[in-house]
Length: 95
Image 1: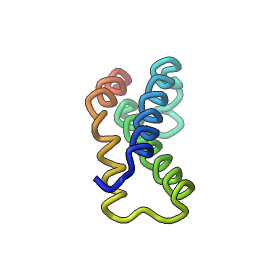
Image 2: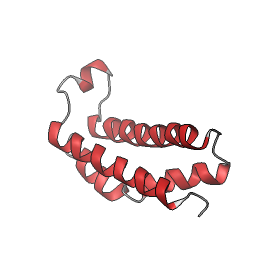
Image 3: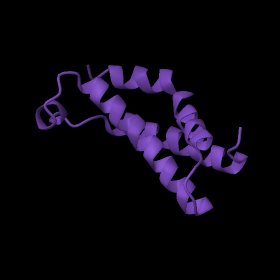
């Protein structure tokens, strides 16, 4: 891994804490109508994953004052993917 351990830990904490917030607040009953999506859980899951990867990439740029390399970018995605089962299980409740 090329990501430093502190950044990895911060990203893991971001993922866990944000997922906990989603679990506590649920989803707006209007999601399907507003975004015209038939599978609300799949939509929310994709939204969450994009939010986590995007937030981690932004944090990387702020901390390191540069763009991540391709390998670093993939490692950030892998950090989110490590929680794929928990993420998918939670958002499946909205399908």
